[in-house]
Length: 213
Image 1 (cartoon, rainbow, N blue to C red):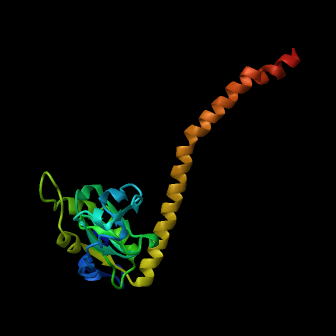
Image 2: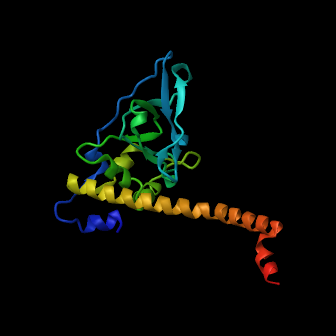
Image 3: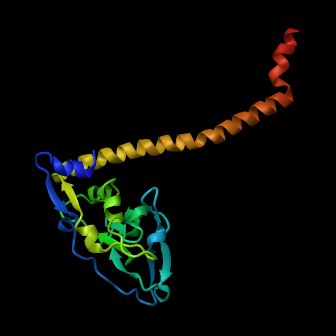
């Protein structure tokens, strides 16, 4: 069921809110000291498929780009405002706590909601087309923070949020394992083919039939 459908028929105890209602208004902006090292998350750091920060950069302050301004914490949800159709979103992992993110992200810091619930909503089948429809600019297609924060979402009680997120993560883990198993099949088939060919060259495949003749 889509988020839009849920909003039409909210279960008991659930409420409708906007993303802005359940997040801090703005995260702190800083200028990295020129003599300090810091970890930088820009849009290219996000894997669009896995929705993870996979390639953060390690920079010194004197290398800092002008967009390196947002101080982020573990569990902050990053939403790229450029080309929202690509849905470059991620949740900041523990190891990147106190990193600096590009101003190209809207940084969502959850208040009174489970951050992982928020994270799953901004990667939903409703959020992506809604944001894509609001894009401005042709050469640099982007949305604004107010577009993200005005998006309506369902908010169940906190224990329910956690139960749903846990179930989603279990299903995603199963899907990932199944996908990895399928991706391994060509290699296994190649190994089997090589083994059969090697056995044929050794005469192992016909040795038994020769012994009967």
